[in-house]
Structures are given as C-alpha cells and as structure tokens.
Length: 527
Ligand code: ADP
Image 1 (cartoon, rainbow, N blue to C red):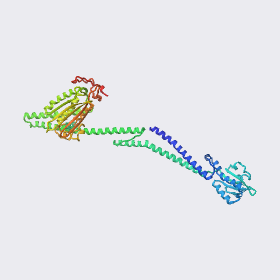
Image 2: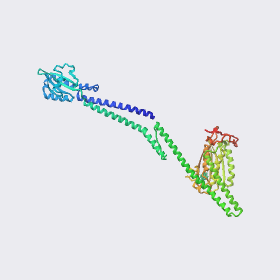
Image 3: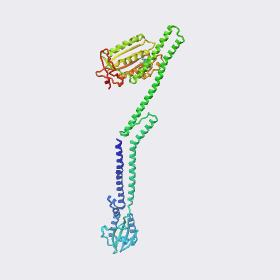
Image 4: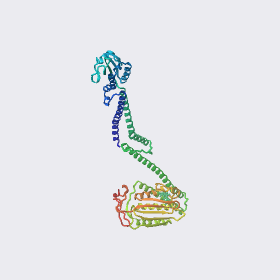
C-alpha cells in the first residue's frame, strides 16, 4: 500500500476510531448505569430520561409515592407512628429526597433542611391539594424542588405527606458515568494512538532507521550488509533502490579490489618474467664484454641466446599489449562466414610444420561435413588454436613423445572442437582458475618455460566474444583436453559486439574464405 494512502487511512482512523469506540463504550456505560439506577430507585426510567436530570429526579420517588398513597388510603394512622415515619424517611433519603408530614397545617415530621417558616413558603397552604396534577408541585425560585403530596385523613383530621426532591443535585450514578466516559475517551485515544504508532512505526520509522543505518555503514566504508524490504510502498521502493545502490557499490568495490590485486599480481609476474631473460641477457653480455666468449663460435652462440631471450621478452610484451586491448574491447573483430573444414585443414597444415620440427606428433580428425560453416574472425580463432597448441608444447612431458590431437565434430547447432595433449596435465585445484587473467599454476611458475598467465584468458575472451563456450578436462600427469563449442552458421546470423569491437565499414576489407563466401559484418551486427 502506498504511503500516501496509509497516511490518509491513519488520519481517518485517528478521527473515526475514537468516535466509534467512544460511542460504543458510552452507550454500554449509560445502559449499564441506567439499569443500576432502575435497580436502586425502582422507578421506570427510560434512556431519554438520562438527558434531563429534572425528569430523572422527578421519577426517583415514584414508587415511594405510590406506596405512601396506598398507606394513606388503607391505614393512614401509620403516619402518626414515629417509628414508621423514621423508616419511611430512610427510604426517602435514599432517593435523595426529604419527608415532611403535616396535619391540620402543623408540621410534625420534617427530615428536610428547611425551617418551618421556609416550609410554609414551599408547601401548599392547606391539605386539600390532592387533586393537583399527578399530586406534585414544582417550587421554583431559590428552592428548585419537586414536591409530591399525598393527602390523608386520620381520626378526622386532614394531613399531607410531602416527598420533597431538590432539583439542584446530581445522581451519584451520573458522576460515575461522567468519570467513566472521561476515562473511556482517554483510553480510546491512547489505544488508537498506540495502534497508529505501531503501524506507522512499522511502515515509516523502521525503514527510515534501516536506511539511516545503511547510510552510516556506507559512510564508514562498510558495504557488506543487506537492506531487506518487502513492503510495496514509497519507502519500500526507496529501500530497494538503496539496496541496489549498495549492491552495485559493493560489486564495483570488490571488482576494484580484485582488479587492484590482479594489477599487483601482473606487475609481479611481468617483473619476474622480464627479469628472468634480462638476467640471462646481462650474463651473456658480460661474458662477451669480459672475453669469456673467446671463440667466434662461442660468441655466435652467446649472441643467438641473447637474441632468443629478447624474442621471449618481445613476445611477452606483445601478449600483454594484446590482452590489454582485448580486455578493454579495443581489438576490432572481423566476423566472416567461414567453412569450418577448409579453415581447420589450413590451420593444421600451418601448425604441422612447426610441430614436426619439434618432433611432436599432431593428429587431426575432422568429423563433419564439407558444408559446415561458422561465423568467426579467422585471425582471432587462429590465435585461440595457436595458444592452446603452444601450451600443449610448453607443458609437454619429457618422458613421453608429445602428441597433440585436434578433432572437430558436427553437433547440430554447434561445432565442437576438441584439442588434447598427453602433457603434464593440470592439478584439479588449478582447473577452475586457469582461464583467469595472470593465473599460472605453481608448476608452471617454477618451470623454465616463460609465460604470462594470460594466454588462456585471451582464448576465453575471444571465444566468449564469438558467443561460444570453452572448458577444460585434465588429469595431472596424463594430459589435458580443451573443448570449444562454436555456433554453427545460420542464415541471418549476427554476432553482437560492442561498437568499438567491430571494424568500421571503411576500414574493413572483405575477407574471402576458401569456400568463396564473402560475408560483411557491418555496424548493423549490433543487437
Ligand atoms: P601461461 O603463459 O602460463 O602458459 P596460460 O594462460 O596460457 O598462461 O595458461 C595458464 C596456466 O594453465 C599455465 O600456467 C599452465 O599451468 C596451465 N596450462 C595451460 N595449458 C596447459 C596444458 N596444455 N598442459 C598443462 N598445463 C596447462
């Protein structure tokens, strides 16, 4: 739910809930107290009587009034009995009223605070008022009372029983109701506020706290935390955006750390790899300078060795430059449709000569049709094959005749290239990392063979850019097998590459492969 809606609901609840709960509670209290009033005073009170203290107080002595009326009819002599009158007074005072009894204008029983003189003013003058409406009179002015009159005749003398109820007073139940209503309102407001607080706390304060903690963490350089938020409101969105930002920052921070570490490793490797041939060159130069190479043959050998070492260094620097350019996508690809059989036949022809000169056996098996095509940059693909083959040569075993095999399979949508050797193999623990930049196994680091650890990183980058896949199997001490899957050519197929990696139309020259197909991959190759 949106925060805006939540706030609207919160304000509505804040306004409506106390009213609803208050009304329910007050109705309950009033009904309950009305029951209590009925029970206490015995009169037939209605809910509407609650709104007027006059009508309540007017009805309060109804039952006593009826009783007194019955006694006046049946046994008026009881009004001469003081014990009875005391008992009656008790009942009347329980109903917040006073009892006054008069006979022949002489008041002989008075429980009211009024003096006889005052009573003379309040009470009707003679005992013949029984025909007054309902037997009651209202005395206004400073008295504000209701007087219920019951006339009686005892021993031939007329008398009256007065039930006097002052109107300037409140039923104790009313006070109780007032206190309870105030308490209920306070409780309802407190309860509503608490519920709202909990709700808003959960949906606003907590996410804000989380965000604040997050910003503090980021300020302190800690990016390894997570801000979870499932709510689908504005703050939820903000938390998710914040988490995304943290994730990206963390990722780029980790990448930076990784690349810093790789850079350091690269510098270490380059220093080491350059230092080794340089030390040798220095030794041979000193040998020449100090006349240790004292025969023309020796001198010739020294110079040849120096030339080889310089060649090694040159190759290393070339590899580094190439990788850096590939890595930053500065090497443009020239994708063309190539006939796989013709391409591999040519490649193998080229490599074969070199390998033969090193007494290495090359086995080649093409297990596909003549009409198998793929989209590739022929030069970069050659680099892949050369790098893998040169590794097989580099890491060959001294105890067995080195055999390298290249096989190409038709696998429907893919062309599967398998290149294996019977060399030293790669330890299981190194296998997952050999395509990493600058990764060299401990074995190769300590071997006399120079290497930069980027040959296979270059291979992987090229295959990835061809939308292919490369993986490796190896058994240490037995040999290594590289597998490459390339996409088989399909009509309209294009390889998508960043802008700067596809040669511009102006610069490119059409490459014609042996099958005679010419394929132009222009800037429209971008997806
Ligand atoms: P390097 O310049 O060290 O050869 P690469 O990236 O080409 O770097 O290879 C990475 C590591 O993989 C090498 O150092 C080597 O230990 C191992 N490796 C690659 N190819 C083979 C292979 N055919 N036989 C054994 N080990 C290999």
